[in-house]
Length: 335
Image (cartoon, rainbow, N blue to C red):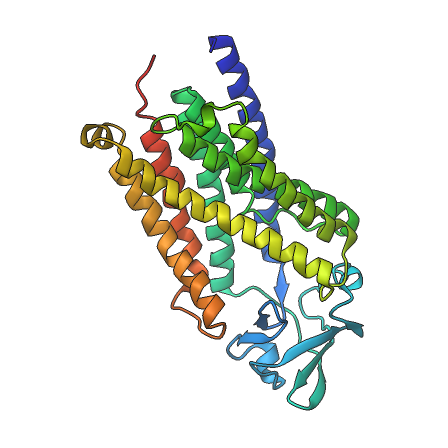
């Protein structure tokens, strides 16, 4: 590939990185304006945690309460719920919950994020910038097909950790969210693509339909996500549940396939190659980053009420992935 092509690809990647970084920075500046009602819920809208001495706890909301309505709207009325504006600090929102045979209405005060919540948001932004910048540096300093795909992976996956700024109009927010989700999914596909290029090209990627097999499924996942986001079907409807399940299963499948490929690539490499390309570090970083998350996912599937220690911070370990993978890819011999 010509030097001119390498320069052009690098320019496009840098331009995309600048736009994504602007999105991430705008989101980081918005963190201080975010509020919360003093509780968190699971996918069944059941309260699973209460902030100690928070507004929800003070008015006797309890773990296990199931939210069925917000501001008079049933929770299944997705198109209305998602369009409710953000609640400013110090104001209230009405929640209707069921507890056993009782139906109770509560109006907790929304407060700003506490120090721990703020730290988690800031850590997420830091991890996002690790994915955004570190592979990009590897691509610029050691241009090669593998590092370019790695940089694309980093650009896409970085958006998973950036919430972006608050957008008042839900329609604008929905369009932005679908674009972000497309890039995240392309980042997942680029991860699989990279692992078919590095440390050695696998036979699949050399076939005419190899790349299509990697990237086409994420487009199907994206269509399911885009339909849910843009058309906001009732959350409890069968089509919405199927689309959500298809999306979540597909993303987990890509994640698990990536982990399998890392292990397979390591096993198939010779000892000298493992040392030369730092595949030991790449494998170790991948396992350290992935095992706690996989454990939490499995625990959540079989024991929904179980909360592992520091579970909300396991994502920080994912920063090891762009670091180790970029270090390994940067050791590709110059040609």
